Structure formats: structure tokens, C-alpha cells
Image 1 (cartoon, rainbow, N blue to C red):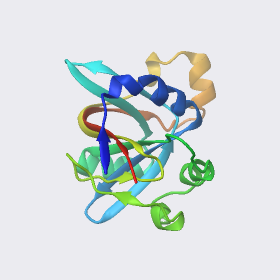
Image 2: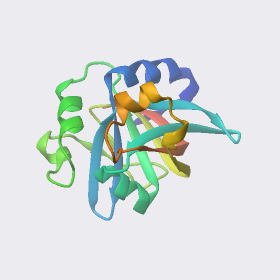
Image 3: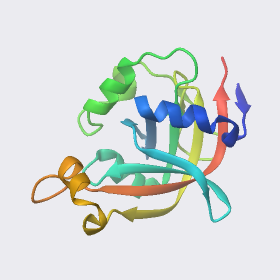
Image 4: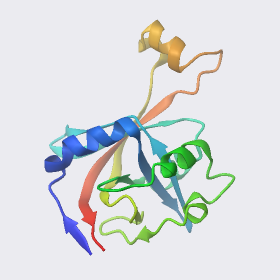
Length: 171
């Protein structure tokens, strides 16, 4: 069962959770992948509710997002096993099935093709309406050195996802 919510009533909860990590889940074909993210924003753009997720160019999630253009944001609400975030932030979906490895329960979506995750019940269903690669030259030097060192930096792509569904998964 899903309890529909007004996403902005939970904006504080979502922003607070981002500091510790949330999951961004994608799907292309039969392949479902999830990864931990700690960078994101919730707001309004073009009169639409949006969640902006930042994904590095090299990530497996990026290839699925570029293929499908949909994602869910899976946010802890209540008790949550923090090991989920460590595992999903350190393993690649290219090499392993993180959903299966952690015995996570996929929850059928409402408005998109990407499922939610029951263990992280506050769920945003998003459709990508815009994406933008970061411009390294516009990033202050201090931040470049900290987050993008080296000759070939692994920049982030900002994926603007229109929030087309928001709910809490109830058991």
C-alpha cells in the first residue's frame, strides 16, 4: 500500500536524509540498479516539482539513466539499516546485483517504470526533463581540487527529474 504525500511537506526530511545518503534507483530493460547519493536538491523549476540528482559521468547508473530517463529516489523514513548506503555507495551495478545482494524488496511503481525500495519507504518517482554536465571552468579552484583532482576529472551530470509521484510505502 502507498500513502500519497505532498513532497514539499517532506522536504526537510528529504534534505536531512541526503546528508547521510539516499538511494537513486534506475531501470533499463530488466536491469534494476541502485546507488547511494548524497548530493541532491528538491524544489520547483518551470512550475514543476523537481528533484535534481548528481551522477558522475563514469557511473553505471548514468548509462541506465541516459537510456531510460526515469528514476526513483528512495529515502529512509523510520528505522533503516545504514549498511545499505555503504554497500550501494561502494559497489557498481556493472559488477553485482545490489538489490539481490542486500535482499531489498522492489515495490511496483505508480507513474514510471522504475520501482521503489520498500526498505526506504519515502519514494519519489521522477522523469528526467533536463540534464546538464558541470562546466569545470565555472567551478571554483578550491572545489575543483577537492572533488575533481587530476588531468581527467570525473564530473557530475545534474539530472532534473520532474517528480511525478511521491508516497510512503506502507506494509
